[in-house]
Structures are given as structure tokens and as C-alpha cells.
Image 1 (tube, one colour):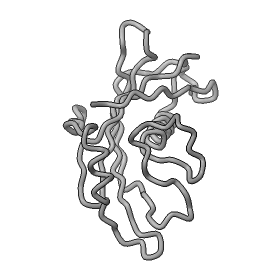
Image 2: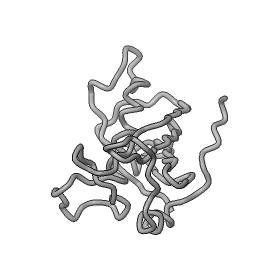
Image 3: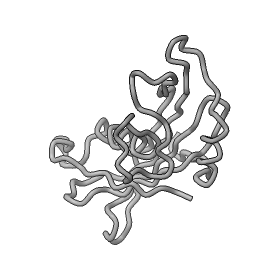
Length: 157
């Protein structure tokens, strides 16, 4: 199962060619990842996704760090006032790492539905004090189990 996360674009995301800049695409991936898996301590609103169970705070005992990100750009992404539709799922789940996969589509309701980019980010959890990897607790792997699918197979390598 995939999460569908609407991510708004900003006018300032455009580059000189009139489409969303490649660096801004990475920002969109980051925003979708944070909305999908992290919550701010003490700020739960009830609107969080069921997967948003990691704590996003400098005071956390366990931190999540980006170890790797890969993006495959498929089509230029034009500006739209409607948010793009980012599908998010877990491609691989290791002891202390997860591969978060993304498909960035045109806004919901726009036809034809266009796939602008695919991305994958490897996240590693570490102990905040020692910076050593920390295994995911069982309750996290159980909560994320429905969102596991095959990882992305990048075609333009």
C-alpha cells in the first residue's frame, strides 16, 4: 500500500526554463518523507498519517539521518497551484535503515496522470549520543509493514 501525500509547489521553485528546478524536486521528496514518517514532539494534531511515528526533535534519543538519495527525473515538472501527488512506500526495511521510495505525479484529478520523477532515500537511525546505528523497535516495523512494496528499479543508470 502507498501513501498519497499532496505537496504544494512554490512559484520560487521554478528555474529559468519554466519548470520545477531539480534541487527543488529533492525538497519535495524531503517534505513528503517528513510528513509520512515523523511527528514533532508535543504537536500531534490528529491529522498525522498512521506511519508518522518517529519523533522529529533535536532532543530525541534516536535520530534519523539521510544516508543516500537518488532521483530519476522523467519529465519536466511544470508549476501548478494544485499540490503534486507524491506516492510514498518502503522499499527495504533493514535492522537500522529504511529505504523510502517516492513517485512524484501530477496533481490528483489532472489527466493524463504524469509521472515526473522517482526517488529513493535511505534513512539510518542512530543513537543521538553515540552516533551508532540503532535497530528499529518491533512496533515500528509492524506499523510500517502494510507500506512495504518492491523498491524502485531506476531505468536510466
